[in-house]
Length: 348
Image (tube, rainbow, N blue to C red; front, side, top):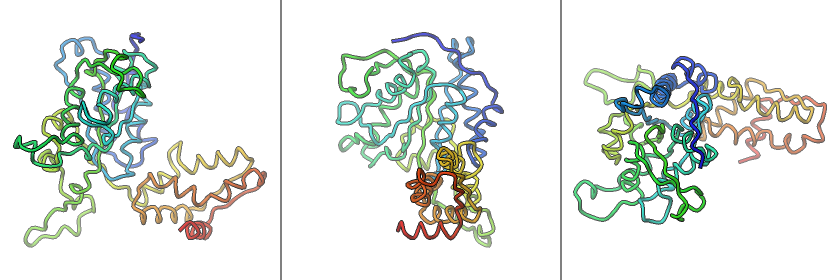
């Protein structure tokens, strides 16, 4: 295994934020918080004094928000600008050590794979753990010491503690054969940045109660919901020790119709740009009417899938054109709201 020491890209929080802002629509608070956490991460791994003293702890992040609001996308873009290896893990795939399922060490093994086997590079990478809310404690047995093990809930949280805190661990070299304990490498997770994410839908749905003589109806929609605290997360089933290792907690908002329309059109890699380029390769000019895009946004909101569902909708709408593209060279295709409604009606 390679141990060559890499040099991380040094950027200011403002530079990181501006890059994220080019791609991620809305979520201003989240972009700023992640930019600060990333800047501190770079300082910790590149500044000799901070690294040696060990006084400055990691700014691991917990993102809370509905599906399709950009949690994974935000983390992926962050890794891109920092030019660091990035691995995505689904918390629901892991179990407590010794039980059927993946051990948490496999997360770091996947990061090592993304780093091309370069241990030093992997040791300063980013691991994104999705669905962290799905490994909540399933009962109060853990609190009282009675009852059996919660191998897919609290057991996973307990296994994650030392990895998030930072410790030298034996990591499988081949993540497809993580059960083979003979092929491993020693990797230090002290300087790996962890970004955890979950919907926590039951907590996000808690609205502020109306005090006597006062109504919250006049407040903006997102201001009518209670702020999520560590105590709320503990009641949900997250153990305090894990929350203590996720000091930066950011609540992300559901994307509005205006935000979803911007997602379709504004980022450099927007779906409109992607499909235009795809059809251009077949010498076809693809034109979207604004009302047609609004119709897709309305359908997306109806399905409650967030920005993640926009690609599926685009595939449904353009299905016939994508199939016939090789036979339509030189043509201009206009996507109208009428055509969108017709296509979506056929897909039902």
